[in-house]
Length: 141
Image 1 (cartoon, one colour):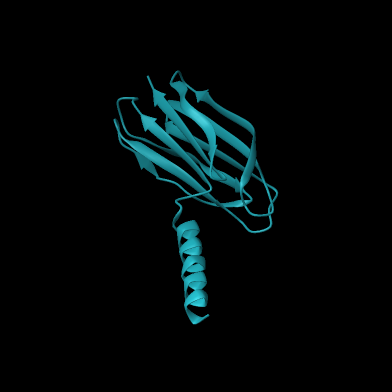
Image 2 (image 1 turned 60 degrees about the horizontal axis):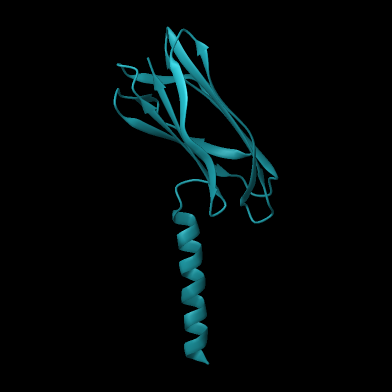
C-alpha cells in the first residue's frame, strides 16, 4: 500500500511540475526581418493574464510574448504593438478558457500595420496545443 501511495504522489508531483514548467498559456513569437531592432511601442494590455515580453527584438531574431492565465478566468485578451518610431505592427488575440485553465477557442486575432509601411504577416497559427495557444508572426519591410 505504501508503494502505491508513493507512486501516486510521484505521479501527481510530476503532473504539477510539468504543468508549471510550461512556458505560457499563450505564446506569441515575433520574427523581426525589418532590417533593424524593433521594440515594444505601447505598454501591452493583458486582460485575464500575467504577461512577459521582450523590450526589443534584434533584426533577424525572434522574440516571444508570453501570457499565463490568472486563476478563475473564462477569457483572456492580449494587445501588443512592436516596431520603431516610423513603423509599427499591432497584435490582438482573445481566447476562451475552461475551468481547468485550458484554451477552448481562439475567438479573435489580428496582426496589422498600425503606423508606417511595415509588412505584418502571420507565419502560423494560432493553434491550440494541450490547452495552450501558439501563434507565430513576422514583422518585415
